[in-house]
Image 1 (cartoon, rainbow, N blue to C red):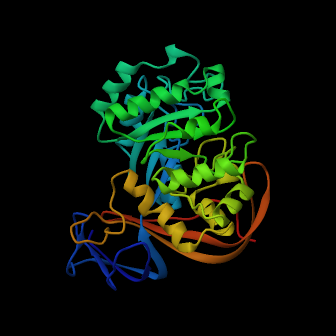
Image 2: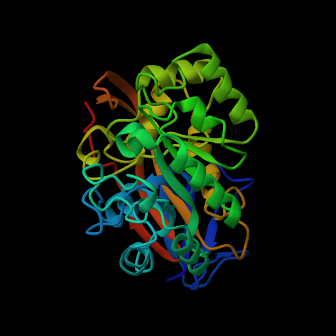
Length: 374
């Protein structure tokens, strides 16, 4: 049914009219549409649809993945990228059973390890050279160019062991061959984080950029932090990737205060992080607001920036003829105790509260999952 959106505060758009019309085909209309259902947004913010650049939604295909709907529209997210749940051997299932049927836009970073995260960490996907099949990986990428948005490698000791930096180098070479970005998970060595940084080029993504792991954090030394700043200035993208083990309040607060703002805010939602400490995108972006990221930067890092990686509309999303893709939300006063991935706590005094998503001519209610406001 055609829609008429009224009584909202636009944010994240180049320009916005007082009212937005969506026609029966789900496109933004230049003029009023006859018979449109009126949606009074009651003074809430309206932004480009929230986009989560790091989730794990290959439910049933890995032992940690949640259902896409649990990461998606019900909590205000209209687009997401599965970050390496599937490798070349099982990507066909992720596409058929998750990506294609979803209401949300879902793309994927293909894991360089053939088995992906089938038995995450219990059976690491990068044990030795037999874990990577370059020819099959290239074939899967070419057959799925419309939904594969990059290559994923987990470059930390619990995954690669003594193999060190080599899997990341192979992943980077393949990414170069197919002209896609590399998303690299950084954490405990080996390899050292500076070894990883040395192979990255503009457009590549460092996920878990504000982790607090000893010998795996950008705050370990002044030289490492300067290296991270230089990389960000050169166009290497810093992504939050909160997760159950990879976000630290102090690392984030100090880095933001020193001028390093994340490119994208993502959740790394999976079975072991959704209940606590992550919950959802709204809680995650509220944490970044609490440690010093401005409201405007929070919006950019949950909308236009990650949407650009997936090739989606952003600030231009109200251009007539564009598919409607919006999140409606409020910023409310609150008193909510939350934790980072190391169990450190802070009290959030403001929280993002999603109210609705609009995709095409379909409007659905949305809400923050947890924790409850104090």
